Length: 248
Image 1 (cartoon, rainbow, N blue to C red):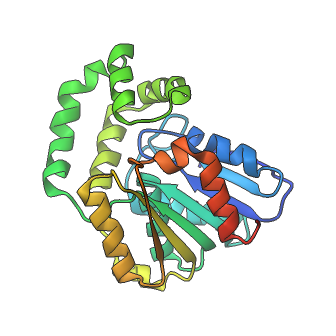
Image 2: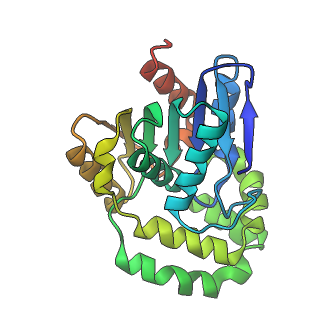
């Protein structure tokens, strides 16, 4: 597993899992803010730019990170956060090992499969793949994601580096993931975050997670779209993280 690390000298570890199609820079600003207090680990998810393995499944990605925590970080960490696909990987980690962390933030994670979207992933990327390297097309895609402009060069560079098969594989996994009953094993203090302007599927997923795990808190972020909390408001994300860990 490839990862970028900050603050290696600290004992307490924070792990942040980026969204699909992005990379470790999803949380770069958060890591910079936290590096004087925590060992911050930003894994590159399988199949993404800079990774050392193709994407196979959310389950195997979760297992790989759990193995890393077991072998390198003593079997558990203080905090894990994840956005979208990264949030699904985090949920899977909590399903496989309920005590893998003490605190968790799940942001904008889909846990209700979308059969229609899942079926269209392959054909859609098959028809548009030739445009992936086109800077103008990438700029239009980037604009539609409502990510702050400073991250465009990172996005453009890394989106071009993802292989077509990997892109289709993790997008299919993202649209097909369902919350597992084993999530009830989770012992981490978990907070759910969802933007008020996100899709109905994401909002329904957040409601389902809270219904399944009533002890989890749900924060609906007014005016926010998908991923805007960690990508566009890193200072607010870090404030919430420190608050959750009692570091304020």
